[in-house]
Structure formats: C-alpha cells, structure tokens
Length: 191
Ligand SMILES: [Zn+2]
Image (cartoon, rainbow, N blue to C red; front, side, top):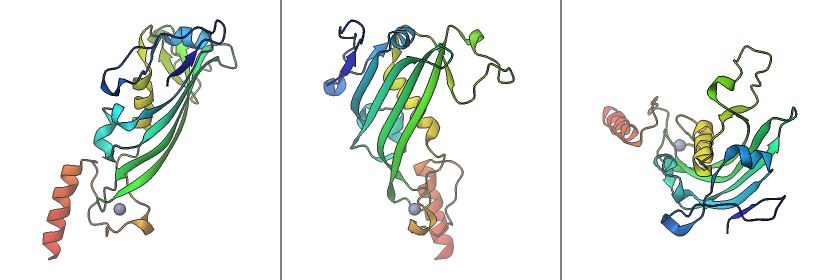
C-alpha cells in the first residue's frame, strides 16, 4: 500500500506503476512535493534496489521509507528522508554474512539549478544538508538508493570480536570475487 497524499486537498498523488512486484514507488515533482508538504511512507522490498543488490549477501527483507516535504528553517523547499531496516552484508574479511542495521536520515534543500547551490566556503552553505536540483520527474527510489549507497562502508566487516577471519584478507575494494581470490591465495600460502 502506497501512502502518499496531499494534506491540502486530500487527493491521491500520482504514482507511477512499476512492473516488477507491482509495487508503486512514486516519481515525484520534488519542488511540488516540498511546497505542498506531501508525505510518502512505504515498506519497499530490498529486491527493488537494483544497485544495492551487489552489496547484499541476501536480498530478502525490506526497508521502511519516509519522505516528507517541508520548508527548512529559512523557508526554502526541503525534503526529509528516513530509511530504516536491516541489510545482510558479506563481511569482507571472513566472507560470512552479518546484519547491518540501517538508519539513515537525510535533509535535502531543493534548488532551482546547479548554479543555485551555494559554494562550500560561502556563509549560505549548510554542510548538514544535501542540495538537490529540482526535478519534475524524480524517482523516489533513486533518492533512497543513492543515500543508502553513500552510507554503506566501503569494505563492510564484522566487529573484530565477532569476525572469524584472521585479518589476512584485507582488501581495499569490496569486490566479492576479488575477496574470494585473495582468500584462496592467502590460504594456500599458509598451508
Ligand atoms: Zn567477518
């Protein structure tokens, strides 16, 4: 069930039907969404996040998404995003899967164009927020997936005490195939 509604008019907001699993994940007009203080709340299966898939040891489960349109403290159109759930990631040291609790909160200020993004050394720049160029057709799932990918560790690992790996397999890149190769090479050297 997609809960997306216009608090001013009570009319259902346009939601584009996605084919796989027939779940509606809206494509929004980001500026409208903020100005009308719209809200989107839904549970989205992990399977729907195509780019996230390569980081997951298992793609069952789902994430709770909340997107709220609002004005920021100085009245600029803004979005508040919250993503919560548990990801099953592959530890890049021992290759076992482990649960990674995800609780992402992000604030976006919507600007008319890239030129309207304040420069980082200007007094107007706020490093607590992300600047988002207004789009009339912004897929919510892309915003959510970008934000998750930004928060994931480059090489996810168990906490040291929970990991069965010995630390021999330390690789910079979180490629499961490279880790597997490194693991085998590490083993044979020690055999
Ligand atoms: Zn581990």
